[in-house]
Image 1 (cartoon, rainbow, N blue to C red):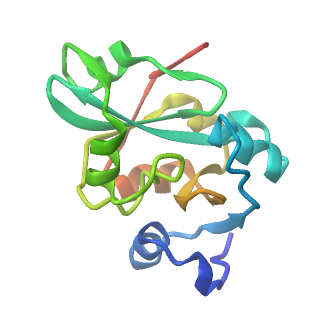
Image 2: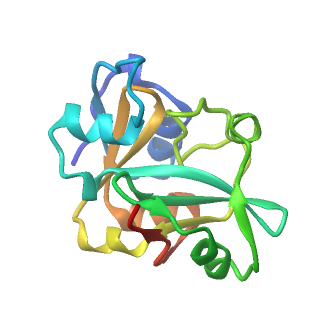
Image 3: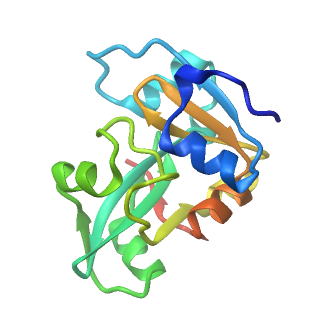
Length: 165
């Protein structure tokens, strides 16, 4: 997997991956502003199994922000996220706070290259994939990389944090 040279795809996420020497592929698609579920839109437009496309969600765990990354067809299990981080209680972060802390807009929040480094947990189902897709830092842009490289670049960890809708 090689980096695709595309100046228009330059985001803090692609810059962080390049600096870390991590192989990734950029996948752009035409984002529909009417799309209700950004991650499912990405899977559909890129022709991918939704189990390989992951969404980045911010939550407050015992008052501190954290990142949970789960397959787009599933939900973040807040209790499991709190447990994975040694906390007791978690709730979804306010979207405005998520945008301010990450530097990205909702629907385009990448787990990579955020303004503020946050504790990050990737659902353990990612281990079953050779590569996964995450937001590249804007709507209509996904990055493909190995799950272990995603863990490495985010200083994250694996845990069972996804549940059925």
